[in-house]
Amino acid sequence: MADSFSVSNEDMSRFIEASATSNVAQSTRRLFFNHLFESTADRGHFHVDQMYGSGSGVLIRFQGIFFLLTAKHVLVNNMRGDLQNESPFWVSVHARARWESLLDFLFPKKVWDIAELIECDTPSIDSNDICLVEMFSPSPTNYPDAFIDISRNESIVLNRTELFHGQFLVTSGFPFHLNYFNFENIAEGFTHSTNVQRHSVPGVLVLGLAGEMFLSYEITDADITSEYLTGMSGGAIYNVQPDINDIRLAGIALSGGSEVLRFYPAYHLLDAILSYRSCSCENIDPSADVPLSEETMLELFGEQLERLGLINSN
Image (cartoon, rainbow, N blue to C red):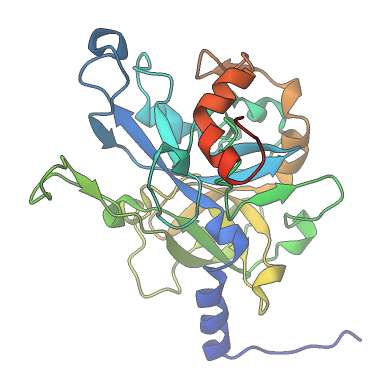
């Protein structure tokens, strides 16, 4: 007979609170979309006039390449019409807001339509609403501090048998009501400001008789409406464990409202990520397939590499 054990409400609350510091939770990043009042060609140089939009994604690494796993509608809803520039959205390198230069951001390279490779027959889930954004490599001196490292020999997602009815799962993301843009009472020299606050929302997994799968927030005191969850689409959903090192990815948030959140189970995604080169893709940056020359690398990162003793300018 299998051993049984119970967890007090106080311990569970403590585990849920601690889970927000896990690597999986902190792998969730906010997308910063940008707008130009004047095109780069007309102005003569790139200049962001305004940041806007909302949405979350999960930073992953596979075969040494960084990707942002997110809901496709996050990109579609925020990047309507022709793109104004080669970097329509940015993602912070680090889990904590820490920006001193453009080297503190990752920039999108191309979008891989991994939904083509996924067979998902779960009711209430839009099987097409997922994509993988390949990012340009970070500066060698400014590497991401939290991300999900995927390999074929490591179990980093919960499989189907590890998800059960009544299970506590937590959603990590950047809800817009906590991360809105402020255009009033701004410090001199700035045009607008925004908070960067990642938020965690615990819920209970519901597995329906017809195979439907979603998170329910009926047990929480908060009124979890669609407005409350706006901006968390694309964020990580993960399990709760006493040891945060045992926390694994359960899914990617898609949409929610009326005390319910629909999500994409991670076990549907893993094989598609491993085979992402088999699906169609679209370049975001026209230089996506042009490798950086040694001259360009030295121009971008020469000072940092020299300080680290990796190159000698003499």
